[in-house]
Amino acid sequence: MLRSRRGAALTLVTLGAVLVHAYGAAADFTIVQKNKQFSVPKITIKLGDRITFVNGDGVNHHVFSDTKGAEIDLLQRPGRSDTVRFTQPGTVEIECAVHPDMRLEVQVRP
Ligand SMILES: [Cu+2]
Image (tube, rainbow, N blue to C red; front, side):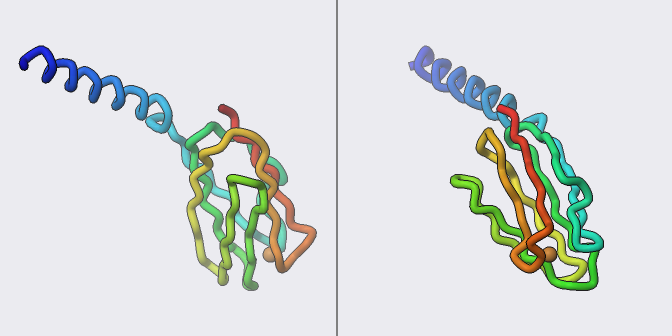
């Protein structure tokens, strides 16, 4: 009995360590939409990191991604911010449905 309980506890600790390894060091980044552009054209992050998209313009933006498995759909009035966590490694192409010239490439490293 004691042995199985200890085994269960060890499993929990191991699971916790795996989760901490996956997301514990997650970083937060901010991308601002200003003058109808993303603040950078390209950003490299790690799996589990978050990006907060801030509409710093006086017009609406409709930030979206059709990248499979990493779809985003953010309709943003001026001043609005939304945070997205990236949980799939690879390249995520982000655009604005209102302004076709707005493009952002997010590289998510495993
Ligand atoms: Cu826009």
